[in-house]
Length: 453
Ligand code: HEC
Ligand code: HEC
Image (cartoon, rainbow, N blue to C red):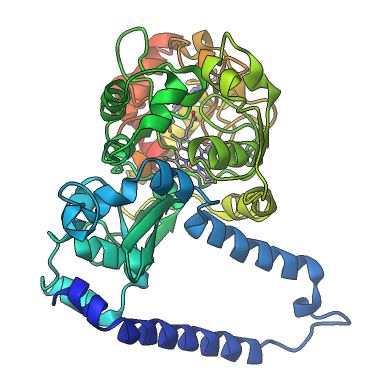
């Protein structure tokens, strides 16, 4: 099936498909409402304003996390013209275009639940042309590309493109094919090559001017990140490489299991809502309000201080009204349980005893949060590493990483920059730093415990 053609010739059919899906959803919801249990006691559960609010916040927050661009299409589409590279010259853009196959290879994910059933069948049967950028546009039109919104215009094709939180902080379960499945909100997308995707954009003037470098330099930096990484501090201090020449980018962290954790990001910039406002305005280039005078320091943050990133005010503000529910939703995302049989339970139990005992891990990673309840930051020397990344943040420290769901983001390694390729290496690092005197079998038991979290 030529999906692109079918969408061009039969937009009505697709709209009907979407409409009928909506009807089914509405009917299901009504059915559920009709089955509400009788009120328990003097005030029924359904009348509890706090529960009603929680449900509303969860729904709104999920919608924002998955679909809201905060108006950032004016940057990604309007200024960088990224949509033109996606469409390709044949469809009114530039270059070869981004085929679904190439998009999947860059780590972009497809939400199977956004695909009409007949399209799912065609995909399974290999009847969809995955080499045709028109199919990518059709997928964008279905809102099926996780974290990307294509603004598809009947007359002009792909008119713009925007990005969402889900781009980096959601994966899919590959239920239909690799890269195509049900959404897993909060999972770190360690396949996603953000730098290579941004590098597709034909015009990087906006970033080059901000950093006061050439577009070629910007492209070289973007291509130095690699899959699963992004540099959230680049637009603050302009540092692209660590003193040893390695990339200054950090791994995309999960956004699950964050409830109860005080400071967020690898270097403890602030609470979830601080960082959400930071990212929506400064990294995604959405249009909101952001206040953080720590960014006025021209020595530590020359780029941010010059650009006034600590004092952003857009009218209208498309971010601030969404922050409450967005935070609520993130805090509601549990860390995923490790698959059955993915670790040795007996060894993990012995590992747990070491974790809270002789290995001293729980001095910082306090269960069940696995970070400190309180001010969860440490100087670099306390964990035996260099301070490069810590020094790029206001408190110049590293935040104790919450450890739940570690098994789900082994790709790309561990610690902020992925310097340790495996949990074995992490444990060996602690053995060396703290002279713990753990036998190899004991180190393995610690690893099994970490895999069980
Ligand atoms: C382009 C990829 C990208 C996008 C888009 C993105 N993030 Fe992030 N996010 C990152 C990276 C990388 C970090 C780590 C930054 C650091 O620690 O220096 C991060 C860190 C975080 C953290 C801290 C997690 C922790 O362990 O404390 C939260 C929370 C978060 N992001 C939420 C969001 C939300 C909400 C949005 C949308 C408003 C968003 N992110 C958009 C890449 C992204
Ligand atoms: C002094 C406090 C402290 C102690 C003690 C400590 N950690 Fe950590 N841990 C941290 C900090 C801070 C980080 C973040 C380092 C980074 O990202 O660069 C971290 C990161 C980690 C990570 C990487 C998580 C990720 O997603 O990248 C693992 C795994 C870990 N620690 C396990 C342990 C184990 C096992 C022990 C005991 C042998 C231990 N830690 C002892 C503070 C501590």
